Length: 254
Image (cartoon, rainbow, N blue to C red):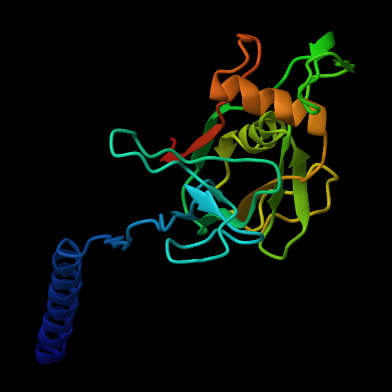
């Protein structure tokens, strides 16, 4: 009997020890939460391309495209004096069908600003009544101009040959500078972003500028302008220089 009692006490003590061990072991557990974060990146694409090629004016011309120096069909040519500077010229019956081409390409992954600035001069005889007519050589007759006379007509086309603008060089300037944008959103395809003045003609990123001074367009006005540049007629209101300069700038913006 006494032995059984001692066994019960021993069993009770063992249970107590086991319970205590379990409680003590529990004090070494803990809550654990872990998280890892990471990322990779690359440089955003720029890739904006602006190119130009060709020329507008030359020292000499033949019946159609600009001639080379050895061409025997030259009809317009600058006087080749040893003491004279060489100038580019235009005249009635001359034209440049090759012209100058500039392109805008790329799909940048950043916002950008596009600025197009054009500087021009144009040949013009202002509107006026009573200009002296020199076409018959007697300086007796006169002619009138109801509007300013711009003899050189320019044409701006896209890569597919669609007309974007035509008229005076000032009209071309107005069209091109109208393509300036303070902000173009990232991932915009610059090849097809702009449309023509009719809202549908795509510029496709390519612009070609050509010109023509038509033969026998206005003989009286043309002859008068030619005499002014030759110095046989004095008229400060007649402008005899023509030029075209374009600057295209693309800048990333924040």
